[in-house]
Length: 94
Image (cartoon, helix red, strand yellow):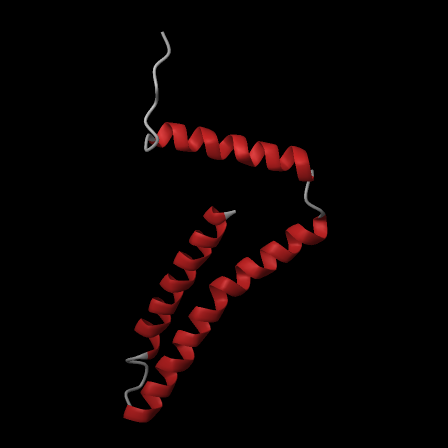
């Protein structure tokens, strides 16, 4: 007796995703070292750009309002969180 599994079952989705990845790996083969290094570089920039953007924006606000480092640290942390979230989404999309 075969039972139909629901389409929205997380286990079924994960098994399908694993099968698709394996089929893609069998079809395309192992990634080259250059491609892996490029992915690591992209991941670094995805993480660093929002952090530096937040730091520069915070420093600009601090110089504009003469507030020391009042804005620099929190806005840099917001940029860090955005960069981490973006990197996480990019890694899980692969």
